[in-house]
Image 1 (cartoon, one colour):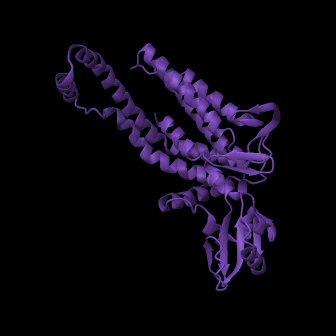
Image 2 (spheres, rainbow, N blue to C red):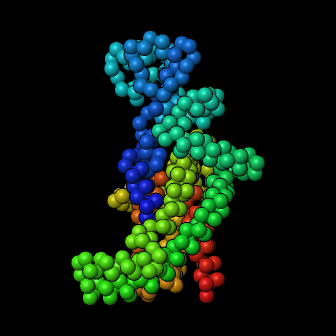
Image 3 (tube, one colour):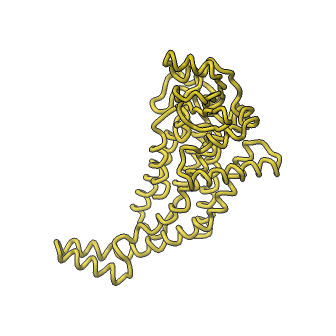
Length: 348
């Protein structure tokens, strides 16, 4: 259930796409397909806003795309205002610079732009996550790819107590459900209307639960979802991942395309991205070894089928994502698979 809700969350953030040359991706980084503009006034103030042609105090504008920044002068802004051109044309009138180098030289502009679309608590959480990622990179002196892997391990171990608590709650829910199911089935067969309702509510009271007891495991979402939202925003936005190779990836900021397919595949495109496929195989393996002692053989088969479907849906959603985001989730899937195997061995 938790993974299904998280999948819905990703669908919500996958409605837009960004393209640069022949490479394209969508998803959480999709908000970047619209150019961001930071304007600077003659008193040195910076603000993230559209260019106001009536504001004569603007001295510069910084037009920011996913991987580069164009610094535009007042003269070019005047031309833009007179001709009513779009921002892409205005950007071409400026001086381009790689976004990573630009932010290194202008940290105050990065502070204005970064995570500006997020709700304030998520914004500060994103800053904290970015700080941790940078600390891991600096202290361990490793590549950015290994940094993301270590960060994924750190997050999963940090959230492990939450997962344990959710698992225990889910086990209790499954136990109660297995007790109630035969009785409720019998009631529905022998009673209807108000009589059936009263009998069912009586059974809930006897077992000390409400009709909403199955929703208890979702409490873990209140902890995990804000963290995951912030993590994927950080991975989508940190300029440090640009032009960073790892394993077979040429650039962590783009999908790990290794060759072109003979034809365009619906929902996936023409590039063959290996990492999302590997991520999906790990998820399918976890589903294959899934077992719950409180479910019947038929119910277990249904649960596994749902997990297979969710794994395939995740493939479609993650397929065009930057490699750094898929790398994080692949490592999380590996840890989840390991936990599934360990639980299976211990439970025998």
